[in-house]
Length: 119
Image (cartoon, rainbow, N blue to C red; front, side):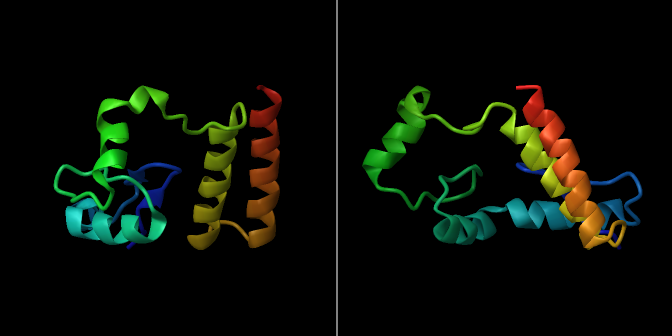
């Protein structure tokens, strides 16, 4: 089975997925509260799932829930997100055996440079 494609901020099921139901079940499992809680304890992210418990203090929870307009997230660099996505896409293709590491890095650099040049 081919794995789900992992973009910068999403899980994507590829058209050629051999078992859509299994892939969907894996994606649902990964995004469920208990897994997200464990991930966010290590990655220090705020909760994103409705069934996920927050690990933040009430003060930080207030910022994320009531004062979100003061938060500034990516892109730190103009057009940085397309550059990140080019890297992630090429890394995934390398992991799937579709590209050599050298080709994946060369393609990621070319695509990332093109995205940054448009900024």
